[in-house]
Image 1: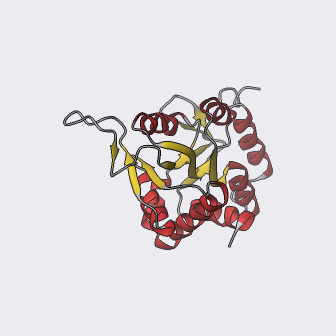
Image 2: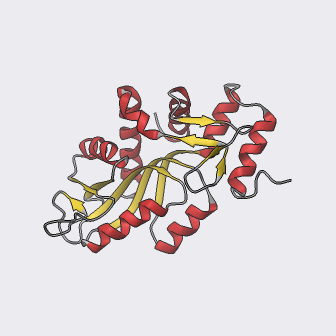
Length: 213
């Protein structure tokens, strides 16, 4: 299973296990205060062996295709760690993970595992929203001499802010599926109607003002 078909299947998987919930008429409030018609908890995927295997194999294939020079897989704490482990196993590559903050004892390391200076590293996260948190992990890895060549994830909201932030950091990224695929699948499966789909598209274009006329 590859390409477009896999993107649709993973989107379907996320909807099926309620890792992604769509509610355009009764929006969720994110921790940042943004009102959003979508809530995503990809941590749920780790409890479903068939789905997590499809994700690991799919991201491994993305890495082979886009970042063939990779030497190290690194997971972001905590959501990226289990997926990074399965992907590293699939690719037969070493793995590390990036702590959310440096240790407050010892050498104050932020990367766990053995990383050679200059090792070409792909960071794994479960979700790309604006890219802020994973790009902080990129910076932390770079401080410990990783050569971060890209970021891969399960799902992207496809927000303009993410494109801008990754471009500014000069870090390419790729995800297995994305917001556009997800709402297409949700419509095909009659989980949303046409007017709800329009609201969902409106949010992606302007997350701060989508509820205003």
